[in-house]
Length: 241
Image (tube, rainbow, N blue to C red; front, side, top):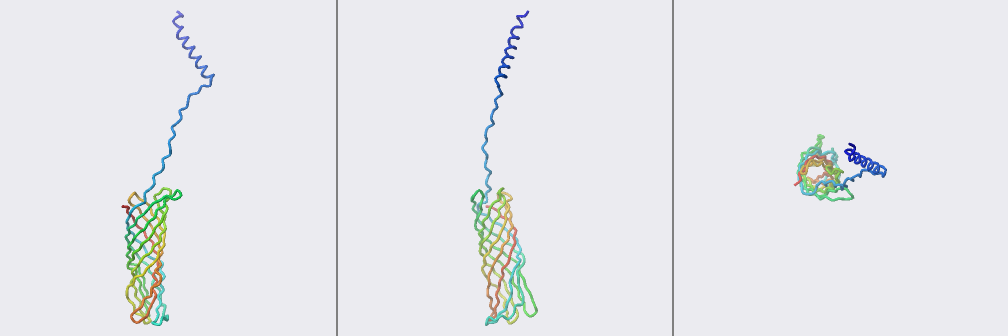
């Protein structure tokens, strides 16, 4: 009768003994270490390459004081100012390079632009009148910018040169001038550009344009100095090729 129970009792006793030995020896369940995964570098946004775009803007902040001089260069009158203001529209083409500098992405390159305009100003005092209008200009700018941490926004500076065509008219105090002239300017500015996707971005800019002084003389030798300097703010869109 008891012989049939011997094997289970012996097995149970061995199991209890083995459990006691394992506990007395400080046995613990082994911990399997998780595999080490190397960090993956974030992809770098690509701003490099050719692009073209469209812009629209507004000219303001001109400072063109009209003075009329006789043929001996004596100042006869300073009747007023013809300070440009009004809309502009433009097209441009450019190329950009991109480099890493001290852990940040730097983007730089030239841009060639054409801009048409209806910006103008005029006055009429009764004894003298004047009108100035910006017709168009061609500009070569160099832009250098830095990308934000997410690399989807660029903050940049602008420096460049341009040539503008202006219509100018002055009448009074013996002067009768009505013609157009071309003059050169240097320009500086700031801008920000936001990438919408791999091909499209939008931007906003401010520029200051200094055209210096241009002496304009009528057929009788009377003269005035045109100083069509101004500021412009622009918004536009770029398309990467």
